[in-house]
Every structure is written in structure tokens, then in C-alpha cells.
Amino acid sequence: MINRVVLVGRLTRDPELRTTGSGISVATFTLAVDRQYTNAQGERGADFISCVIWRKSAENFCNFTSKGSLVGIDGRIQTRTYDNKDGQRVYVTEVVVDNFALLESRKDRESRGQNGGYTPNNNGNFNGNFGNQNTTNSQNMGPSNQNMQNNNQSSAPKDPFAGSGDTIDISDDDLPF
Image (cartoon, rainbow, N blue to C red; front, side, top):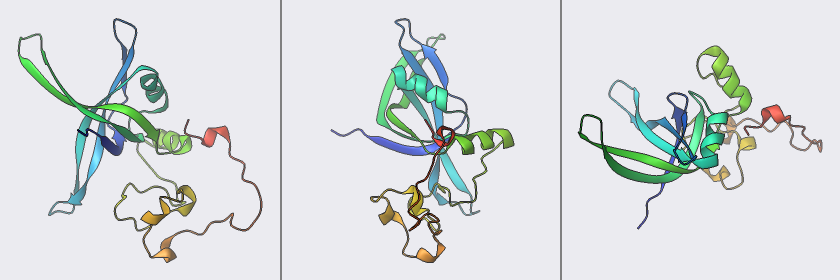
């Protein structure tokens, strides 16, 4: 049997971190994932998927993400039931997160927070559309992901560091972790 889920989306609100009676950390959040196709009006719909993450990963997730953060998650679907305070049976389907990845830099996350919404910078950022990328940034892709680029290389930005022989200094503030 296989039960695997991989999602890329944005948080609809800040994750909620709680601690169980036995001291285990658990965080819940909702991930907005764009649908692949548009409707008749050209609008792209989204699915809002409930997720839960446990232990130290939950603490790290809450420390490094907030409403609107672009994240990738890997996990499994779980269903459960419980009786609410009115005695009604409630059915819950959620993704139990095993691993997550932060898909935007700290700088982009902070600028989004200051501007009240997501505003990508102009150097070929991730555009969120894996299947049909019109613009790509080969600097941000590993060798295995470069196959996802379109054959139209003229739209891809040129590498400003190619052939310079210089090292690149990256500040800790630029790292997403």
C-alpha cells in the first residue's frame, strides 16, 4: 500500500503550535494549493488542505513560517473521527507532514510581510507552476531539476557569475533556515 502526499502551497494563516498533555509539540495549518487549470473566466481555483506536523519539526515549522509562506511538504493522508461537545461525530481528513521545505528566502518572506502580500523580486523567482514554466532560473535549480526547463532558453536569465572564477559570499540572512 502507498500513502504519500507531496504539496507546494502557501499558508493561509500562521501555524498554531500546541503541546499535548505528554509534552509533545504539534502544529496545525492550512495550505492553499493552486489548481492546475483555470475556469471559464480564466481564474485559477485553489484547494485548502489541512495539515498537522509533530515534535521538533512542528516547532521549527512555526519558527520559520507565517501566513503566506511558500512551503513544500511531504507526508501522508490520515483520516480520523471524534465526538464533539454536542455529541456529534466529526470526520477529519488531514495530511500528516513528515518533511517540509521552505521555498522562499527570508528576504522575500520579510518583504512580503512588510508589503502586506507576496511581492517576488525581479531576478527570476520561483513562479509556482512546475508543469509549464515559461521563465526559469537555472541558478536556483539543481542538475536534476534543470530538465524541467522549457526548450525556449532565450527567456531564461543569464548566469552573471558564469566564468568569473570568483567565489560567492552568501549572508546567513539570505538562508531560509
